[in-house]
Image (cartoon, rainbow, N blue to C red):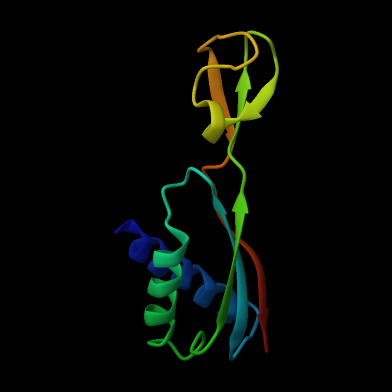
Length: 114
């Protein structure tokens, strides 16, 4: 249920950006969500529609969602691999000395407004 909290935080950020850029309306927002961020895209979109209907700046705005692939780096063999497919253990050398490079992000990529 943290999607709603992320939506509210995003709306706060967008309202601040709107003020800074003298926008009276934001018509489209593109966001990038990490594959392992824990955000359910369908639920996020539902929360977005509900929350944006309560603010003049974002009312009837369009949300576009992009996925950031989860990629892990192995410090033992210095290779990268898909996190979702292989988890924490490197498929190349079997090491568990790995860390997530990308895929946990939640980013505002682009805003259109007037």
